Length: 143
Image 1 (cartoon, one colour):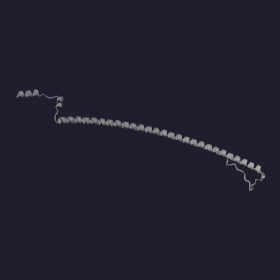
Image 2 (tube, helix red, strand yellow):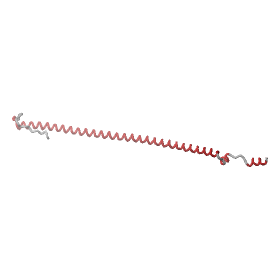
Image 3 (cartoon, one colour):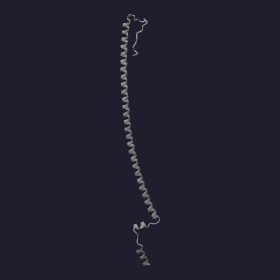
Image 4 (cartoon, helix red, strand yellow):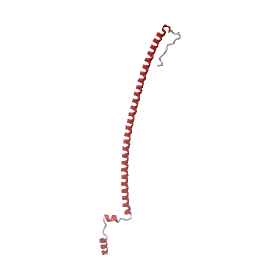
């Protein structure tokens, strides 16, 4: 019997950790696989969180740049509208000046025509031109 014990002792030596890992059985393998599976899930979750954070940062950057571009576009549009308003105002003021000059010229012509007409009538008809005499002076106001 001692020979059997000595034979078994030397023949079945203790296994190293590497040898034990290779020869895991049953529940030991389930524990190892669960740990590896949990680690893999944690790694994938961390990768997903990192990817989402990067995408969120990129979206925020796009939003910020789009807002800035919109501000610039609005500013340019407002400048264009202001310039258009100023041009239109200047044109209307110029038209008004031209109309006022025409009116002044027209009123001067009417005054001159009226004075000329009165002198013409008085020289032609002399003292016969009295109110109610039936002869009406000619008016050049329509010119």
